[in-house]
Image 1 (cartoon, rainbow, N blue to C red):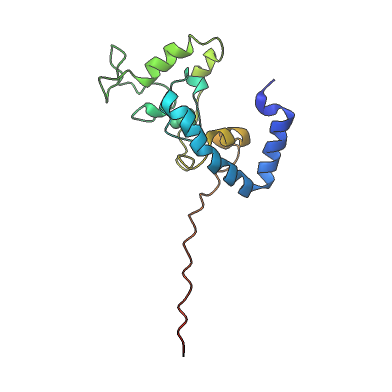
Image 2 (cartoon, helix red, strand yellow; image 1 turned 90 degrees about the horizontal axis):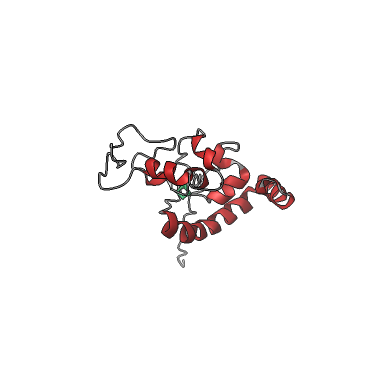
Length: 158
Ligand code: SF4
């Protein structure tokens, strides 16, 4: 059974759908947690729309062109990147790594949406996956600007 279709996850999704402020708080709290786990392991750039398990645990945001659906066409004959010739092409690695996984092997052939830059470094991909924001089921929450500090007016003695 899909983890996101379990009863607690459905309850949580409904809760966030009716309490956007709570969703914001939880999402903000999870951004650093996600970064601590995924940055050292996968070089995560906090895009908010995670495709790790679809891509053999190779982060697509490490591609200098931010390609989400395979190599750009400039990949070199030896499997290296067009922009950084000393590096492997992200998609070359993703394909071979995904085919070695016991599960999700065929997910690399799915078509993915382009990066939604409004979610980039502004929200947790775990929460976006739960609510469907990462695949565009829900509209992007407007990113709230930090409230400007209110300076009380000076009171002068008369
Ligand atoms: S796909 Fe996005 S959320 Fe997932 S590891 Fe890469 S940058 Fe991070």
